Each structure stands twice: as structure tokens, then as C-alpha cells.
Length: 101
Image 1 (cartoon, rainbow, N blue to C red):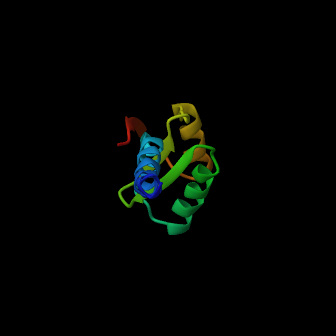
Image 2: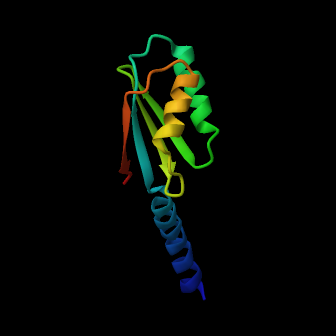
């Protein structure tokens, strides 16, 4: 009985880690725009992307690259991204999608 309880206590955290790492896989969208000159503008755009269901994280590069980390269910199409950027005062210069690991 004690061996079963100990085994469960050892295996349970390993199973949780495995499940969470599998769930963490998804998509990364690299979105290109003009160089950033305003922290507030980047923050405003970040908040807009974070409101989209499925967006897990958002990173900004000062050179004008946004990284949107999303789960596997979210598909960001070019028209939607272009509109969001333009609505927030940014130019749309392209995007690419890759799988996260």
C-alpha cells in the first residue's frame, strides 16, 4: 500500500509536466512592422492581441517585430493582422508562422 502511494506521488508530477509541455506547443507568429518609437503604442497593440482567445504570450522587438505565441487552435490570417496593425497606427510589412517547441 505504501509503495503504491509513493509511486503515485512520484509519477503524478511527471505526468503533469508532460501534459503541460504537450499543451504548450502551438504556433508563433512573427509579425513585421515599422520600428517602434512609442512604448505606449506597443503596449496598446499587445493588449489587443492578448484579448484574442488562444494568444498565450506576446513579445516585442524594438526593430519592429512582434512575436505572438498562440495555442494550436488559433490561426491568425494576414487580413486580420494587417487590420489590427493599421488600426493601432502601425504599418504592416509581413508575417510568418512557425511551430513552437
